[in-house]
Length: 418
Picture 1 (cartoon, rainbow, N blue to C red):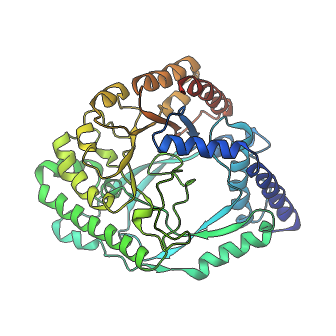
Picture 2: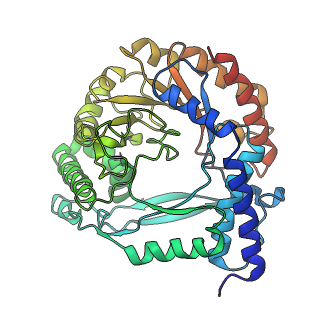
Picture 3: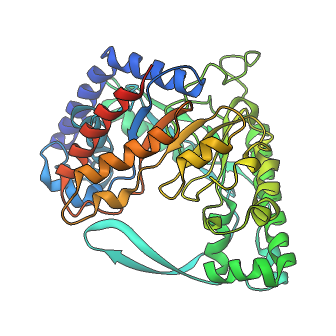
């Protein structure tokens, strides 16, 4: 099945709209705002929303409804509609650059472990619950984690580029890019192989087993980075790609001043990041022993770094001082921003993650949502900040909640600027 004339017309209309949006002067203002925050310069908190359950709300607005029939065209249509909808209706600081980026496709770049799990649907949302079945249980299983043999699948990558180019490349440029950051979420992967409870118990009962797993994973990740560099595949540190679990990475510090504009690039020209989310209730000492000491091996090779995701870090700020070139710290829904601020010994970007559960209450409570945002911004006084609403499993099929929250948040963050 191939795209019909009607499908192509739809894609071209959306591409033309985005090309026009990209020329709006507000895009330059937003770029400058992100740059200033990421450079720790005075500026109001920047605002972003992501990981939205679009399937719940797609039929609630004409700008989101899909009309293409060809599956490939439909996927492209969905991506373009979401970008256009964000610019038209969500009151956030997302930058539209007027380019469709096609990531390089690779083989042999993963850990080689097949995850076995039970999936539980969550209503009409694409979000699912996961029940992981252990596939690594003994020391001899550690060797299942393979060392990568990375190969660039040029044919598949260029085929995707050519398809998009043929539809609308004359209106919206289509470009291929290589890896742009290095996010080492080793624990997110590990618990999918061992089971969550098993891994946490093994921290106490079989620490040598956990260390062996982490050693093998870290070596595999570092070898993957090395092969990306050796192959000349690393892309320019494109700032629209989120840094870590945060938002846009605009900065004057990357790539390095002595790196040619067209590369070749190394990890020192890019953002790095790490996040042991499962360690929310693990002590600082165990956090350092079983996560940070391995993560630092990756982060020490990157130009700027982001740390954390959902885990609260207010009791572990002294550990953050040991992360090389750390610029952004995740302030999760369960993190006490004021305590984190008081314990910090240097300036960071506080990457605030308001609680997405506030969008799932029945009824929606806008006053509680505003109080949550103000509390975290008040507590982080003196730190550069970004606000990222993410991990939104459901909005109870109510698009209005997203629109109301972004309007409120846009109003509030403007009160916290210089």
